[in-house]
Length: 326
DNA sequence: CCAGCCGTTATTTCGAATCT
DNA sequence: AGATTCGAAATAACGGCTGG
Image (cartoon, rainbow, N blue to C red; front, side):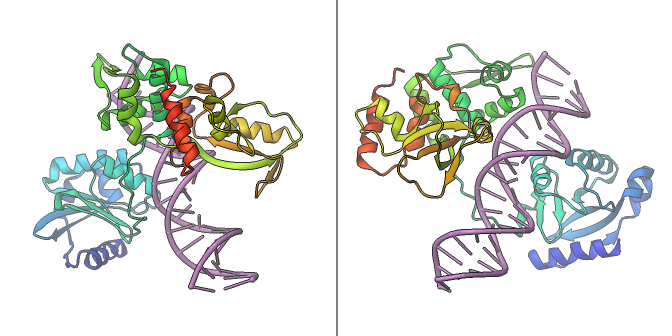
């Protein structure tokens, strides 16, 4: 294990530019057997702060919750700030460690030391776009509220049942709404409730910054089959407004539904559109949830085209919302 | 150069398993 | 029963390579 502590030392020196002098921790003998076997403990001093490193000797990754339990255990006798040093850790577990406020150092990769105000990662992704958007399931929930005119309070389980998501997914959708400060959140015992004092246009405008296009991806196809599905894009817009029909018909599918269609044969995907082809939009949520009379709902349609620069489309979009019965 | 392709890695999403 | 946690699977981003 000598190697591991050296790596940590080097990583700290290279990233923060201070040398720490790791010393074995004597008190470790007072720990339960299993903790002593599993971890090695070193005291270090960073920027005037004493920290106790807890190095995992195991090669296999440990889940954050278990690591957290062990840290609590050690902390209860140590009385020092603890830092977990996993041997290996996946990106999603790094995020969970942060989520559970567990300080950790992943040498060569990432360091999270909130007590020092350090949150450092080696592999910066493209400067994380701060623009928060709702996940597809949350957007589906919001649209359901807007289109279904839900007056009462709603619970995750109810929404889940109505939209075909799991209760957990709806719980997370509630989380996102709460984070965006949309709706009034409350608990009735264990049941989580959300209530919207304002629906319709007010809610729409409030949520709009967090909503994005339902279209995950578009493909051009040719087929001799008769495709019946919900019209989308300019095709749907042409039905709702005075806009002229587009050159190619545009349909919307959920990913799963489209997979089924392709499997049943006679669908050829094209790189570029050609006369007589269809444009297929694959949606992040099922268009069927809100579609009406053979076309996708107005709001999703608006979201799918709101970045369109074409002047005629833009003005048709205005008409589209004008025609909305809030 | 550089646009497009492609394998690799990171992140997101979601339901199943687990916990309380 | 409802909440939390975990990991599989889908998706997106990265970065090296290639053929113009």
